[in-house]
Image 1: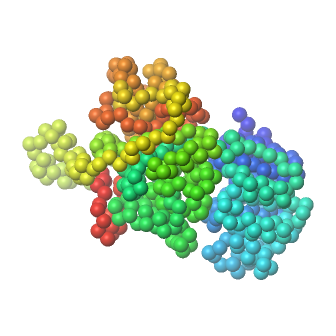
Image 2 (image 1 turned 45 degrees about the vertical axis):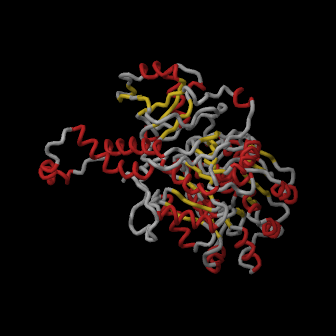
Length: 584
């Protein structure tokens, strides 16, 4: 496998790469870096978000910049303040061993005079949002008339945000002989127009298929009535303990409203949109990166600066107007080789949009059902049991044990376990046991014979199983399906509806394979640990990992993916909304 040393990078960059722990370049880096180092050329690179594009243009630019000159030689334009700061911070890490090389970020919401002062002190590389850059050019605060390299990062999103005229004005202030490197996830006609107008015979690189979605993301849709959209969102969260997600809404108003309702109902949620002050946006993003916020409700524009590799789910509360925007949304998950899930909540009238997106991203959606209340109760019950088992004992409790034993005297083990679990489970059961089915009738795409030709498994006659391994053990829906298939020596489509949680999972097989499954996993050990498989008490439900074409296998690291505790109670629900039950 190609290493960074083979790409032609100098020692100061290789030392910085070593410090960062990078070992193998991503595909976009492997394709871009040698071209940009060895040739003086314009470049158009199409690659999904999260594939390492910053290093793909950052390493060559840093190596080509003359650090002993204070002239601004490189300009990088990015769509949002958050992405601007992220790129700047990464470039500073890459150039830590190059003395005298300065990178400065300029963006709205901060002091323009202080930014101008930083540039005047000497900034070989400027990273900017289009609006602030145009403003500073107009005021004579920045000189980009001598730059050698210009990068348009997330070009499609900048143009989608209405920066076309700003970008044209900015590029008209740059020298004709500069080299332009354009990086984009998709190639709409506006991006092609910029490339044609300001680039000369650019070298073209495509990672994956043009405009296609990432292969590490599974796409699902849930059909509900219009009034049930928010209730469906809550059930999807409750059915996925440990969820760490971005929830997309179309408008700032809907974003704020949904976030407020989630907080009121006890979820760890936050809003991110353009009406927030910069300080508010920073607070929300810091909480999200620390996983104090586990459901970030965002507009498409505000979410452009989110660069977090372990987002488990993207939830499309509402579909965007442009298909390209869906590609960007789903690209928030399934990053850095990990797998992710993109969920779409739709009404029947929106099903045609799913077909259009499938055609664009060249991937098929799985039609799923919103979990029933009883299914959610079962998932949360197993989740609670695993949390109890894995909780570290606090030695301070020893002083209180004699009194506690007196209180619990007379209870046998089974009765004690039932009572402990019932403390939380009863609350959840009372909330969900009498709730109605949210799934809309006729909520399936009419695919005709297409479904049959893919060897799909019918839900009738299938058996659903519980298995005591999950994300904490290093499995996601793709790798667990591979493990089960290899262990049982079955075909790819014999294991379906694979649904991984934090410390346990579910999967389905046809009923005739049930005996094989249960026999195989009797006294079955992996690395000395028993792997237990039981038949689930819930009816079969649509889960992940079935009815799909082959895709690249991903493997998410287990890590300490904290359980979704449903939000702390510190005054978040002051308006008296109905509380979400939870296992805390």
